[in-house]
Length: 346
Ligand code: NAD
Image (cartoon, rainbow, N blue to C red; front, side, top):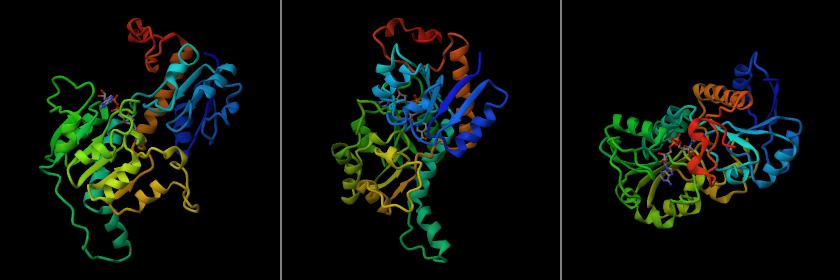
């Protein structure tokens, strides 16, 4: 394999550190661009073999056409989800690889951290004691032991979250489009999950099918005081319906690591700006809402795995036909798909 040139978009200091470490003594020339990959910035990829992108880069048809015209051969996602890539359009044009798992523990543990922070009012207590205010008024929480948690999506992250919840003595119910047989998990319908859960945590991918699965209608079916945790993808929840649900005291708390319009704000410092997004501003203003900016993955272990797997994906792609982490294009030939044999899809 000759030197592979990689245009690295949406680069942050922590990305650069882990990729510099992982690529030491290897045959890569990596240029780090702070900007996201969009129609406006795609020309930066001229002369590169690979674009390396993350969750908020926008790889739509126009971007794919531009990449193909510049002879870029591979889109290497540094994440698991690929809802920001027009995968169907890319089929037969440009290959896409991803990092299917970097640390499911990081995300599951962050979901529990958000839940505990929220229901034990740690975010409030932290600010109070910093100001030498030692009053306990308004800080009453509730026990997790004995509560029912509804888990939507029981893949890698959902299953770890379930194990953590079991450690707290919680009752677990779950919904998954493809339930894991023999897992001992009690699967229920979505309607039953909305009805029975004291806490609901989302761990499924975002698809056309489950866009806004939490909306006015589903919130109406939930228990009064339900706590919602979303560390998956923002658009699973209709943010305006959530605001209404909280205002009506139906939703007791929301823990959000993702937000449907996050690509406009997350990962940037807007502390000296007036944020335009009124829905986000309203959510952040609420005492029972905690927002982290797509931080759940951010552990040393995960960053190391992301860098190692991404560079291995690139190497696999350029060395031979082997391409274990190629995204499935769900193409018409799905029955004879070579991916089952770990080969390139086309
Ligand atoms: P996974 O593929 O191991 O599991 C996903 C599960 O969701 C599977 O069991 C699948 O059957 C199920 N599923 C698919 N469609 C569904 C639907 N419509 N309704 C209910 N369940 C459905 O994925 P994972 O590694 O556990 O990751 C889950 C999600 O977490 C990812 O899709 C991604 O969006 C998100 N994620 C977030 C972060 C973060 O930093 N916040 C990091 C990594 C992943």
